[in-house]
Length: 113
Image (cartoon, rainbow, N blue to C red; front, side):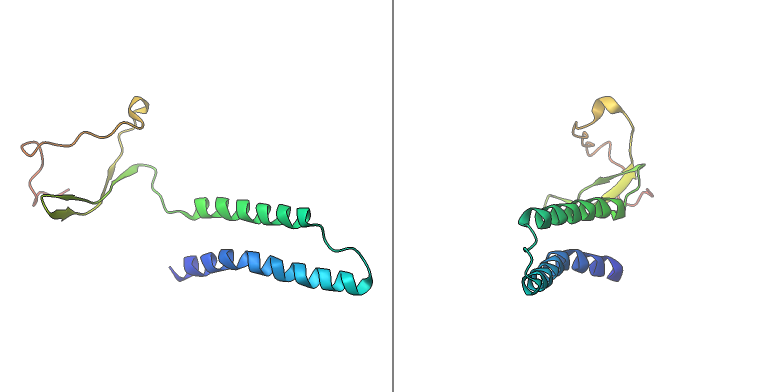
């Protein structure tokens, strides 16, 4: 958890670090009498860093390919927690809502899952 928090703080601070580098570079360029960095280069650097961060966040997301998640919900003023269950791999049903079990089909609450 702490590693992910530090990583997200690092990703958050990247634009500030790049801007600090920009200030250092333009100050040193102005002192040397040269032209400042073009804005297009900074935009390309920022876009590249954002794209890399996006792919890294996707790669670090915990997932199990064989499991699906049913989100938590409220039924009859009772909070039913989220649960993981094995996915049925049927491509024709991708995107279709999963049918709800009727009360007489549902397993008892104390039944092992």
